[in-house]
Amino acid sequence: MLLNARRAVIGILGAGAVTGATLLAGAPSAFAEPVPPPNCTAADLAGVQSGVSAATSAYLFTHPPVNDFFTSLHGLPHDQMEQKVNEYFDANPQTGAELKNIRKPLQDIRIRCGDTDGDGDVDIL
Image 1 (cartoon, one colour):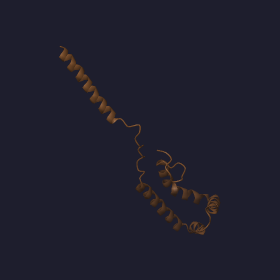
Image 2: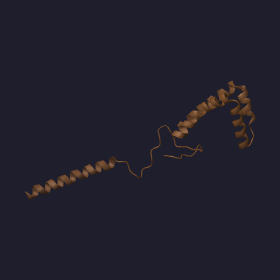
Image 3: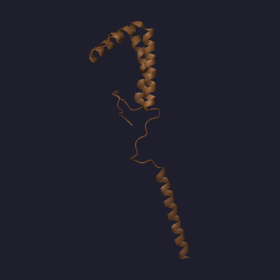
Image 4: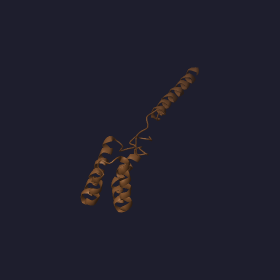
């Protein structure tokens, strides 16, 4: 009888150990690297960038005055360029809205993939 009780205890402990190991193996580790959001690889970003570049090029070719304006910015210091673009968009809100819509997929992927402040670095994950 003592032998049967011992076997029962060993069987219960063994089953508990196997169950515990299975549960722990399936649980995510607290120290594991966070999983990046889907479609956030360098290839995904490059694909979106190329699409935005192609759409911007097509827009500028089909809107010569806008193309001329942006061409005239070449060589200006960044702060002057930014000021002129803001002034141009204030004077031409439809153009500003159309170009911002073209750039939206690039902004969306950067935000979705963790760059919340637009500096090119992933801020969240």
